Every structure is written in C-alpha cells, then in structure tokens.
Length: 234
Image 1 (cartoon, rainbow, N blue to C red):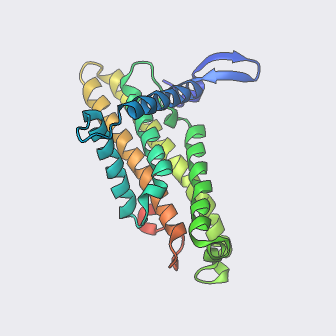
Image 2: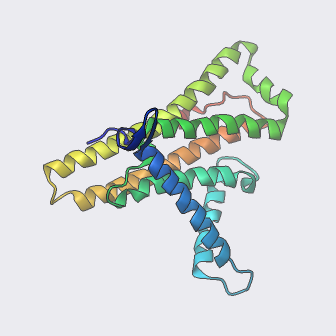
Image 3: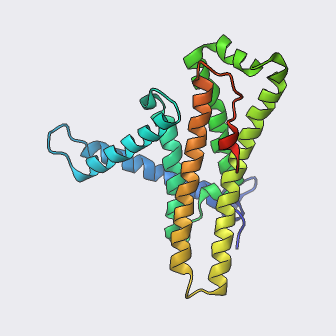
C-alpha cells in the first residue's frame, strides 16, 4: 500500500519520471477538455433543451448559489476559478471507482499546487475589486501591529488548506486499504461508497474555504482578520 501516488513510478529516465500523480492529473485534464467540447456541442439555444444541458445548468446554478452564500455578490465572476477547483477535486476523488486509479489529491504536491492557486487568486480578486492601496491597507486592520500576523496568517492558511486535503484523502485511502485486507468480502462496497462521499465532502470544503478567502479579500468593509475562525477550524 502506497502512502502517495508519487511513489508509483511508471517510467523514469534520469531526473525525469512519470509517476501516478502526473499521469492521472493529465488524464483528468483530458477528461475535462473532452467533456467541455462535448457539452459545448450539446448546448442548444432552442426552447427544447437536452437532458445534458439541463443537468449542466443545474450544476452551474448550484455552484453559483454556493458562491453567493459566502457573500460574493457577483458569482459569475468567480465561477470559472472556484467551479474548476470544485470539479477537479471532486472528479479526482470520484474516479477512485476505477481499478488502478490513484487520486492526484493523495499527493502533497498536488494539494500544495491547488492551495498556491488560491493563494495567488485571493489577492488578485481583492486588488481587482478594491484597488491596490485599499487591499494592502486591509493587512493593517484593525491596527498596524497586526501587519506581520496577517501576513503569517495568509501563508499559514495556504499550508493548512493543502495539508487538510492531503491528510484527509491519504487517511481515507489508508483506512479503506486496511479494511479491505481485514475483510475483503464484506467491506469493499461500503468502504468504496464511503470513500466517494468523503471525496465529495473534501471537494466542497476546499471550494467553500477558497470562496470565503476571496469574499474576505474583496469585502470593502473588512474590519476582521482574513481568516474567519469558525471556518478555519479543522
């Protein structure tokens, strides 16, 4: 049993190697690309809509509603980034139903990359919405003494975001593997279903936390710190 898909190496030539993390990440990217092309062709402007288009609209509207619920007034502006985050993490975890598949989110390198995307995007939207001067001034709220603490908090929450997702996915895979060894004829279906549910929950948590961070950065009345304590609790 491997603790991380990074340990599964399919091909290596000197410094360069193809492990499970890279392979299945590119497979997911291919699935997204093909799926987007197929859905684009199935979109119809007629009054009679296809079942696929109705399903797609339900997913998009649900994501927009969740983005609005955290305080972002224009969810359509953020759905490209936040929606992609949610779908990527969700599909990366759901595809564990396929034999031989290893979720890229079980690799710390993947979760750190996703967290860094959030780390860069938060100030981007904050500066875009509030302006550079006003956004930078928010780091000195409520007093200038809080500047180093807010900067440290910005970095630490990025690390926490990555470790939380990595730890939950890795521990879930380990528990399933152990239970399958102990009782391979009793637990497979139940543990697989539980793993899929856990994967969706982790995708939702990652998505919501990213939304909250952006909402805090874009809020004009930003008198609190950047990290709501009720959200940051593990």
